[in-house]
Length: 114
Image (cartoon, rainbow, N blue to C red):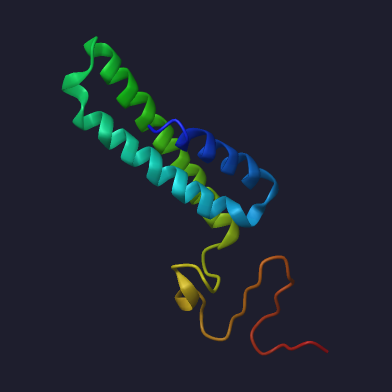
């Protein structure tokens, strides 16, 4: 890994703690970067000396990639709960005539505000 990439990813992840709008994109970039770094270690596995170090690096990077992917998915679900507009599930998960808004009281279909 380039010496400048890890601090940049780390600083972006730290900034995303206080900036919720940054979480999903920063976690996406970090997951992609760690995934590519894991692939690099997989391809260079035979060059590691001692051999156990290559496996250790690969497994720890793969574990970090999996953790980042889980955090990314969790953050994305907080931003776009299933069934809301803008989520891959889209409005198809709503039944006809229903509305759903996070944090708002919902009324049955046909009952408007009085």
